[in-house]
Image (cartoon, rainbow, N blue to C red; front, side, top):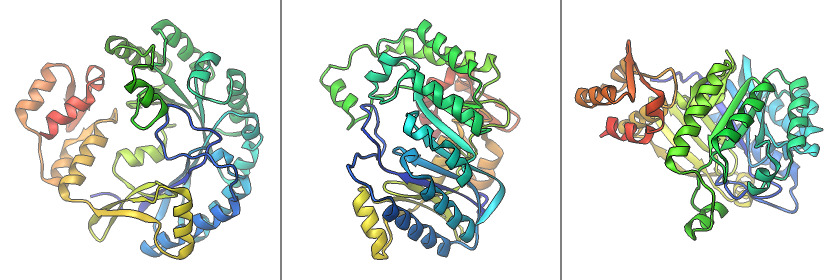
Length: 382
């Protein structure tokens, strides 16, 4: 059903210098972190997974978080060295690391490259200082530009993360900011519309009616359409709903997620999916950093929940993920792998509304439909 000979590996560093008010990722602030202990915890988990698979080939490695650029370069180097020792590594492997644009972290860029990182994703989020403060970011716009300039001189593959639909942001301001970001000519842009998540500082303010200046539905729609139009006009293709790249610079790691490939999540709260003996499993690690580390050292599995996915679970994941990709969902592969088709009346209605199109054997969500992706997904799966 999927290519079981290849896997992606995600390593989650759960620590940040501070918690951003919009962030619902598994990130924590600690006064003291013994990085050597964390290295050993990761190594133990890497070797546990090596014993599960029959020498799989690793196609991508991704250091995420949290703020993995707080890791010392020698820790990253030792982790990659162990992976190269214990796994078969694809010759054209993509090895990504997320970084914040602080001066301390910028100084590590060259050492990360020497350790084996060949793609860096910089969490800029905004080029407007007052908005950076509202988002709880610790850097300013000048530091962001310095990080991009330094990163571009070291890495051939650099991605910029930006958040739009921010408090009090109007359409014209976002157009100017996006045009400026594009002028920097990074190979990749991840552009996320601000969402208010439960159990975050923004979520709590929103529930109390104190989170002011958020865009209404109409402005959100215009922001999304404008983002796509501007990126496309400058050669940044929207290969996924929130991700845009120049030719041949899509994030291979995330594409593997969206195509339901095998991926191992290592670290507190990390999720994974893999196929083994014709069955597909999902799992998630213990979320608390100290509990995860202690469990790793005890010799027990640091996995909290492991589930065998039903055929229905796998089918729904295939549809939900595939609809996010601009290349569309393969109806022939869906029929072959799952023995399922969509209701023809539903398809025709979505086509008439201008939400989807069918090109050959692929179902593609059109720009008008991307804004209503949850609705389309629900209609197709009902």
